[in-house]
Structures are given as structure tokens and as C-alpha cells.
Image (cartoon, rainbow, N blue to C red):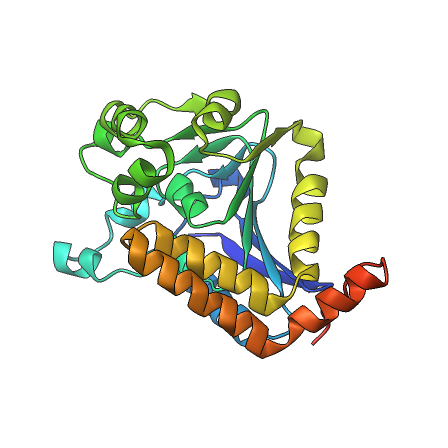
Length: 255
């Protein structure tokens, strides 16, 4: 099966491109492995400060797993031990921006949930159709959606499986911003570039604290946030932030 995941690094931003436009960027096991290899490289590369995840072409971000590939697993046990590409995205420590367009379905939608910022084109249609095909998604939607948009909205999306448009996704809080299709890549790159300009210790600490808030009790979350705050101060980037404020200039968090 054709398809690839490409990695382009420029000015502190790593772009991960799902490159299978002819098949709506449906993910094969080989593409999942390629994604995981790129993420490992991103994690180890200190020059990378932010990540942009996008799909090739203009018809889809990602339509989920390649259905024909799903039929190639020799047993349910082998499928259970598959490389789950949505989990690969969730594991990225650095801030992730997802640029969504066209069809964003199933595992593709679950992959987008692993991003920190989701920017959608006005053409975007987001859905979780697994129930209509006879299964439940395995990439995190049933656990993440209720936390992100509430139990009632998550129930409708997951139990009926019908897609929603970008405007409704914005109203639910499923995406952070909607822009015209032609402006999507420019806007997503601008947001990723801005994140790349922040202190990497600070922005990754914010990400870690926000993730903790989704599952930790309030008291534990507040304590964790304070530890992240101390970590930032121990790294020393706050001194550049204070200098920049006093000198009325943009902070330079080059490390």
C-alpha cells in the first residue's frame, strides 16, 4: 500500500505531513511506524520547539485507518498489540498544532485530539463513524471527548457516528479556530511558529499541567502545577522574560 509520513523541519517547527492524498490520508501500519519514527526524532531534537500535523491535498486531514489494512492482521491479539498512531501523537512532549481540513474521521479525528491546538478550515467535517461499521474506536475518543466537550455531546458524536461541520465543532470546543480553506496552512504555521518562540521549558510545562488537569483531582493538579512553576524558574528562562518586559522588546528564548 502506498503512503508515507514526511518530516520537514524549519525555524524550530517540525511539520509532519500525512502524505496519501489519493486515499484521504488513511493510515496504514507502515505509515504509523513512519510517524512513530519521526516523533522519536522530534523528541530528541532540541532545535524543534513545536510541531505542525497536517494532511496532504485539500480533501482530507485524515480519514482514519486504512480499512483494507485492518483486515490484514492475523488475529485480534495482533491487532490489540498494533502501533496506535493516535497514541503516538498524544505522546509528543512539545506543543502540537493540527491543521484540519476536509474529512477528519475515525482515527484521524482521534489523532487530532492528541494535538494541543486544532485549527480547522471551513471545509472540515469531523466524525467518529466506527459505531456504524461495527466497532468502537481504539484511539482515545471515548475517553478524551467527554473531557473536552462534555458527556452529552460526546455521546451524540460517538453513538450516532455522524460527522459535524467546522462551525459546530467550534461551538462545541472541539476545535479552537476556523479559517477559510485557503488560509489554513498560513494560520497553522503562524501559531506553531509563535509556540516555537516561547521558552520550551515553559510551554512544555503548561502542556504537562493541562494534561494532568484532565485526570488528576484538583488538589493533586494544583500541587503539580506548582512543581511545573518551580521547574520553569529553575531553568532560568524567566530571567529573559523579565529582561524583555523591562526593555520593552520580544523575549528571545534561544537555548
